[in-house]
Image (cartoon, rainbow, N blue to C red; front, side, top):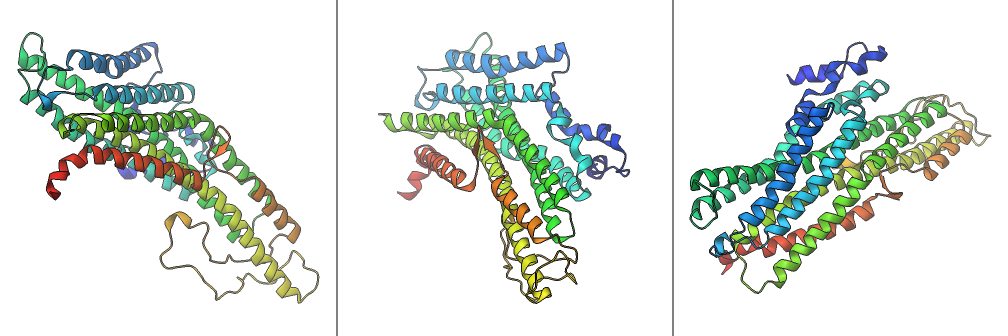
Length: 435
């Protein structure tokens, strides 16, 4: 099945301009995922179903469970003092993700949104790598969601089973608890999954551009006209601007709300006058882990693509230096020309690349690049390097470039908040082990 999907993304007849509209490019797994979340809004009844499910699971169910099942008279283990923060945080992110995914699906469609209609312009290597990433995307969703969902399910089942006579119920106690538990678990799974799904969509679109940048870097190891290099770089920059424009509001709101949720949770847990226990704060810890995980997915993708895009400038400068040195060596001090007698590298035996290179820096290594016989003239090379230096590509959020410095700062803040919160919540469970 996996080979068949790959073949759909890698058609045999590449020159055919209509291959981008083949049914295989519709990505059955993604279409099934959108149907499962009821995000397919191609018709009126699907729009009604989608919004109805959203209001039931992301709005109605959390409100009902909070006010009717608050259980203020229950014992200490069954009280939920932080339930309002948990429900508000999850519902807020579900609303942002749902509106964003619905807008993207309705406005662009799955093929155009994931740039599948542009695969005719890329190499087989890029299409093959993108196909592999697409096949892993739904597995990645399960990896991030299912472990937390298993813990949430265990907590909910224990909560209803151990406090059945304390928890308010309607009619038959067992049937009421089963229905309430199922609705709460379905609501939690829906809200968390839809946020992680939006983050994975962002990761996918970034990954395609990363593959294109890695393929673009190969032009400096072969004879290429400056016009073709500029045209390809302009196409990549345009795609990066499109991605930045589509996701800028989602990224900004996610960052602001995650930070606000973390600060507010720390404020509540720090100012409490009663001892905390794992039964009260465990769900708050799961909520924070899920939200921060989604934010980290987006931050990592933005950092990687921006770093790869900016590494192209360093690679072009290194290529220009190698070509210039070789040119002067060949003409023995005479005026350099645009002809070099043999393809070589200067010096050919030098290789300063480390055996343990960082995978994220493979475009910015210390290996010298080969210089071919018809390398373009010094003026063209210098103009190309100047262009790349003054037109740095990358992910932007409302005009601000997302680089490693800013991301590392944000990552440090969010990780510190998360670890502090986990120490106040889950750390309580481990504390007796060290006494």
